[in-house]
Image (cartoon, rainbow, N blue to C red):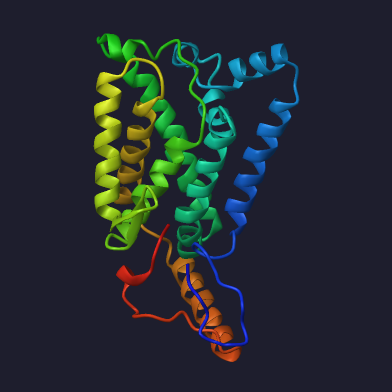
Length: 252
């Protein structure tokens, strides 16, 4: 949270700022899908989830390949949806401003689809804990969210994230902890939460960012937008406060 220094401004801001274009569209699509399924009769809801969720065994036959995309827009409950959308905003808004909307959407879908594809490949391993995923129905945007988390840690490694909303730790350490948890869980917990998908999101995001370069036009747009925002802040006597280094900028 950040309080403005001007005595004439009584409000305060929370998080990374306004919801950006792509994130607004993604949140809208996820919420709409959740509401549509919520009001369907139980049998129709089950059939829709069965068709749109990611079932590795079906994807392997290429008859259900669309599930690699549609599974990202389904959620198992209100808290599942809220936490994923909150993370999308908290970690994605600044990345979209830095990259531009087109690149951000490309990254989001590449990591989400890639995480699903790696989950399908993971289910082929000759181990019981892996093969138990073949008939599972995997839903949620967590694969893409973990990809955004890794990107955030690469761009802002020392910026603190409040783990469990209490303990501030650097973003790079937070990602390392989440990756270790996903790896351990995917190897030891049969069924349940598809931790392999979380791990897949981290891996695909890392490979994508290591093999790609940010388009210079997007970077220039980000710098120009940041300059305009700073001018408006000075005009209306609104300042961020604190020191300018990344570590003092709190992420909740």
